[in-house]
Image 1 (cartoon, one colour):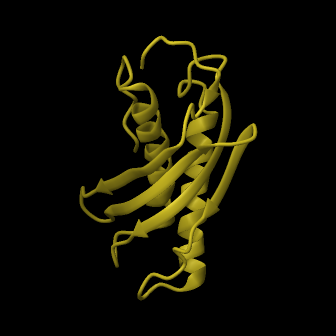
Image 2: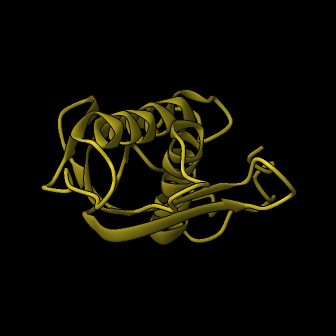
Length: 138
């Protein structure tokens, strides 16, 4: 990331931030694809979903669990002290716009990791790539 002084994240609206978490190292595999918007907001993290509540073959409760896991991942990544430059306040509304699932390999843990990846992708979109690579998501 650049060394410019930042006071809040995000510095401007970031639309269509795509996050893919795909791991295929045997069984079980993991897959999650999500697209979210990051908007400047009041201090803290506000999370909501657009109308992505229907996924063919998945119950509303299962889809809600994926949405919740994505939000947990976003909050975890933003709470990690290594994520933001010290002194940067989080003031963001995250709107989950769309998701894609795999009939076998999608589960809440994959969407939690996709939430973390979405934050990293939003940071890279806002400030450029980090000076040192982020640790791998496991």
